[in-house]
Length: 189
Length: 224
Image 1: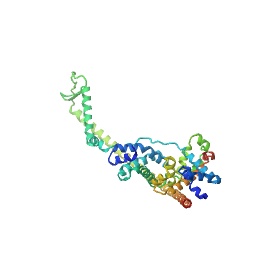
Image 2 (image 1 turned 60 degrees about the vertical axis):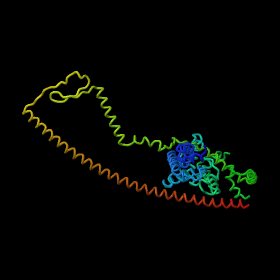
Image 3 (image 1 turned 180 degrees about the vertical axis):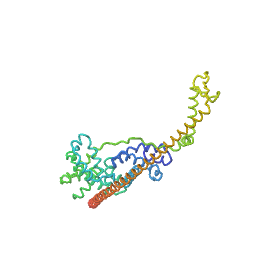
Image 4 (image 1 turned 90 degrees about the horizontal axis):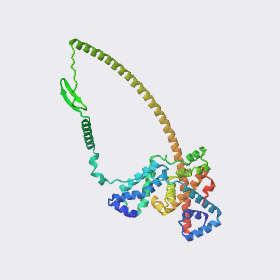
């Protein structure tokens, strides 16, 4: 049964269908929120709020076929609201991370790779991106959406989305280079 | 195709969202422009690195309860119902305990008695009396004890008041000290936030300029 059918059932008051939607989307929304904040508690909270919002607003969704972009949009808006509420404290500026990386002696690139901390550093690098670039990188790279779909979610022109992706990747490369991640990994095909 | 136009196609090529004919033309162009090919390779490398982020799965399962399904059992959770159930359970436990230990209440001679266990034994009572002189002695003794008790209570009360006063002064001092530290912290945080916002605006300006250049070059590509 596809999302569209489930949404129609939920709109008719079928709670079992809603639980099926939750089961299907829980991991995706949690993953999206986790990439956004790099914090499990925050991701859980955003996921929970997203489904509450979906439950409250699903009757206003005129085209059930558009559920996928709609739920991502809800999650993204909640993430941005949370950032505003927290006064942007959850999005660390580049300088802070660079400073932290340079102060840390035991995090040389080789050790980073050996101890499998590379993923954590990349997650930190993601946090240095401006919010509008970070969300595009997450949706493209980790959710595997097309540029057209991301544009629908963010309600932005496709070219703007591509531009944000381009500058996002460039910024990530710059940050990772500043953290001395070796060229051989950055140039890996 | 200019270099700017080629750059505008980088993302389409990198994520394989390009028509095959367009892709071939783009690859031909890259062969003639090694600098662009190098930049694309760098972007591709960064992209590969992004896949090293570990997969995070939710730590618990979400389930939406159906309000209608639980509506019939709501009376169980009402505070009065729960209190009544608790009282009934306590009463049952007391009755059960008494029956297990053979408790028996009764009246015998000069007062009441309570027995446990074997009920065949009659309660033992002792007769005891006091004369008038002993009564006076007892009253005097009680008075003396009351006086001592009163003095002790007054003394304890004074000590307690003194202690409370000291604690209040100490708490007040701590409060003002913490308040001062919090004020200093707020000022520091305010300055840090200002610095952070200034940096973020710089980034936004950079990105806006980037968007503009990107859009212009894309329009040129489309017009040609």
